[in-house]
Image (tube, rainbow, N blue to C red; front, side, top):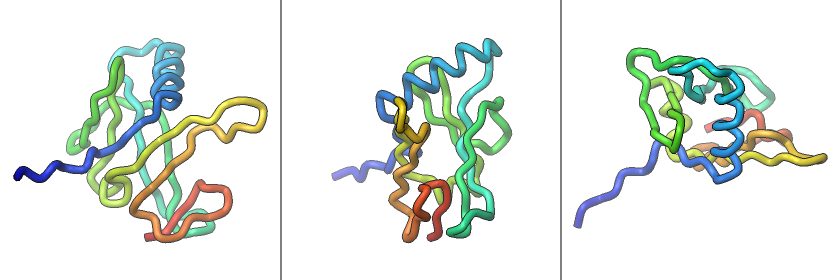
Length: 113
């Protein structure tokens, strides 16, 4: 029986819709969603989200209408992550559900492994 590989990243329907909307507003062909990790935050590592072009070595996840880029170092911490978008009056914006995180801070913006 073949073993299935864990997807690089999963986006909920809400996150996909919001990313597509924001990228359309940028109106710059070739831009994609970049997910990365940097040192810092109250739990040791912080998530970064932005729009960039693909860089050499990036892992690429294809979604309808856009791509998600993750650099090799960040991939160690982000593989299998789910990105959600919570809008509305008390929404938090993009929310990460990281199966690799052992500890997460109260705000959900940093984590440790």
